[in-house]
Length: 317
Image (cartoon, rainbow, N blue to C red; front, side, top):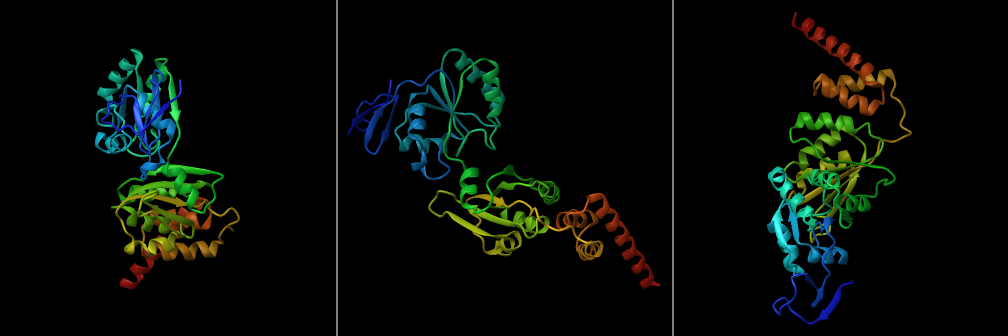
C-alpha cells in the first residue's frame, strides 16, 4: 500500500494520525511494518528529511528520541502525530525493556537521534542489539549524516576515513588520544563542542603538524562555514573563530611519501620540544613528525633531557 496524497487539507481538518504534510498537501501514510525503524533526521536544515522517513514516522506507533523538544520541531513542521517518547543514555536501561515489550506486541517503533543518523555517536546500539537478539525486524532508513556531509566538503581524501566522534575533554587525555590517531593512515573525522574547539585545534597543530584539515561549522544551516588549511593555519585562526554551533573537524591522512628524519634532525627537534614540553609530549610530537620508532625517539629524549639537567647543574657551580 503506497502513500496517498490529499491536496489542500490542513492538520486541523480531521487528518489521520498516520499522515504528514508536504508543501501544503496532507499525505496519508500506511501503518509502518512491525519492528524497529532507525530513521535518519536532518542535521540542521529540516528540508533534508526524506519522503521515506516521513512516511515511516507518520506510520509508526511511537517515535523514540533523545530529546522530545528537539524532535517535536520536526514533527510539527511536517504535521506528524505519532507519540513521542524519550530514549537516551540516562534512561536507556529503564526504557529499553519497555520498547522491547512493545516490539513483542507487534508495534512499529521509530528511533531517531537529535540530528543525523541514529547510533552514530549515539547510545542506540544496545537497543538494536537487544531487538535483533529477540528476533525483531530492524530496518535502517538512511539520510543526513554530519560525518558524510563534512567529508564531502572538506576537500580531503575520502577513500578511507576513521570516525572518532568526540575527543576527551581534558587536554592530557585528548593529546594522548590524538597521538594514537596520528598513526592512522586515513582521513580522520572528529566531533567537537564549540567550547573546546579552539583548544582542540591547538592540540591538533601540536600533534599533527602540517596535516591538511578542515573546520566544518553548522553544516546545512543558515550560518554554515567551512575553513580549510593546515592544522597550524587553522589553529592560528582559532582566536577569531565563531564558537557557537556544531563542529566537525576533518584531518587528512599522514603523507605516505614522507621521509624518515635523520638522527641529527630528530635530536634538534627534541631539543626544541623539550624546552617547552614534557618528555612525554615531546616524544609524542617527535614520533609523528620524524616517522621514527617511538622506543628510539624516547631513548633519545631521555638522553637529551639528562644532558640538559647536567648542563644546568654545571652552570649552577
